[in-house]
Image (tube, rainbow, N blue to C red; front, side, top):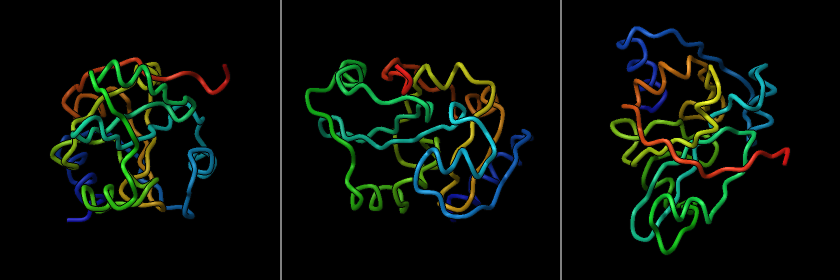
Length: 159
């Protein structure tokens, strides 16, 4: 099942409100915010990281940048790097920029949420494609994802 269909089904089954948008392909968080008509801060940027031998999905506000030393400490990892395009595709079947902020059972990854996401009332994210976005309540998203660990691994872009 395509990730978008899986997400839609999961959200409908949970009975939560969400808005699904179809839009031009977006390659950056700023492009996504523009086509969604939403602030950059509510964008849930989902990044696949390889920490030592394990892959993790880190979700952070699109208005922030990742602090690698903070992430290393949070994951108790000695080595850290972004997943390659091939690794990302092998793990998820997705391309960079299309990864939604959902771990298992949607994606076979352990999900971690940066505190920057928890400061927002909504979350907007690409939903398994570069041309579809979902906007929903952050509380509903957090509950549906199983209330994953909250970590503090980002800096604001404005700092």
